[in-house]
Length: 247
Image 1 (cartoon, rainbow, N blue to C red):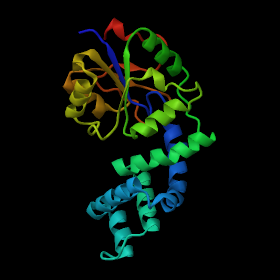
Image 2 (image 1 turned 45 degrees about the vertical axis):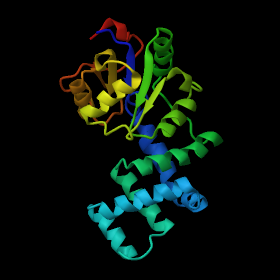
Image 3 (image 1 turned 90 degrees about the horizontal axis):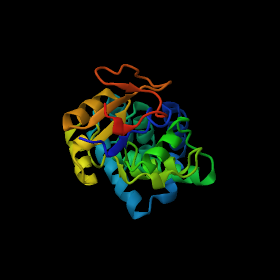
């Protein structure tokens, strides 16, 4: 089957891991309590806070249990405590959907003020432009929320690249390690999985996409924590990648 769609991870694939780990996460972590205090009366934030509290009460991690015990099982959970728990999740790299949503909202103000600018890998902007001009349908699948994804591509060193993408997917679609998520994505894009090329730096994600019938490439970028491509073909520069050539 011909490749018609390109599905891209972000962290370690189009953007350095260091930007997320060393810039975005600390920025969100330091801003959480203030942001929640300022917006706690908004309906959407109230709903997110309820989701966080439910997840917290079901969290069996020792740190989460200890923090909850400090609050008292039957006592109302305040904004400060919720912010502390969310900071725990960030430190543990737990991709709770409500946390991702809140991070996206916080990053919005940072991008808008110019405090945050996404440093895509140098070859990425040109490749995205070329693939778009060649008629490929471009899509994003990241554990970061869709608003966060759009903020990143809308405020990068190459300007606003959002118009190049036709589809955006996050963990609301399904976990990235599940075959069903990739089947859902292909269906949402109106194409067969075999028409989709998925690029990621995570082997479990590639295994799931492969099981769904997608084409796959392992993103091997300098600074990535994992460089073992396993059984997958690797790529470290998109300058010469023409998905129409096949794999």
